[in-house]
Image (cartoon, rainbow, N blue to C red; front, side, top):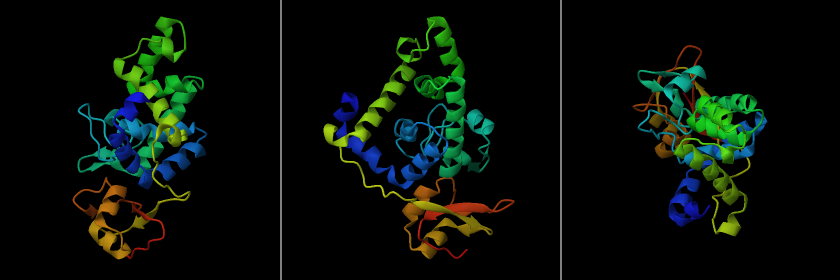
Length: 232
């Protein structure tokens, strides 16, 4: 908590990036019966930047690796990376968390650690230590900080006044909706037809490259702010 508060401006910047996505992520988390704190994972994974890309190859809000994304049914191919798709990546990441929660018998500290370094490393660490107590395990340095960081973010969000943090206003309703696309269209055209800025449309549809949305078999979708209509 002290480390996060030491760079208050940076923390505020991350929190201000969350509103377009956080309602949907929290809704999906609760829908699956998962701990609500998991909705804050993107704070430490990507700082709520869906275009974030690590030098290890992880991408998107949830920093999914290519192999993990493939196992979870997220499309990653030449010219398209579904890990940047807000809806697809969120559903995939939470499905993975559901599996990890089951694997570690509801021990969410271990499940969260496994999301960071892999379930086999965590399982091996518990076997070596003879305990399932996260705090007594020998795990990679990054993981030993990963779990406490999430707990710290959750504590700050739960009681911002205590820590002198101002949370952005997030309305208790969906921020975006999916609209089906049946023909090739430019994202900038969708923005114009809805009266929404290109910046907002790009933030909601980071998986769209070169401004062009190409329909796939069965149709394709773009995310637009709720209350907006488009003519495509």
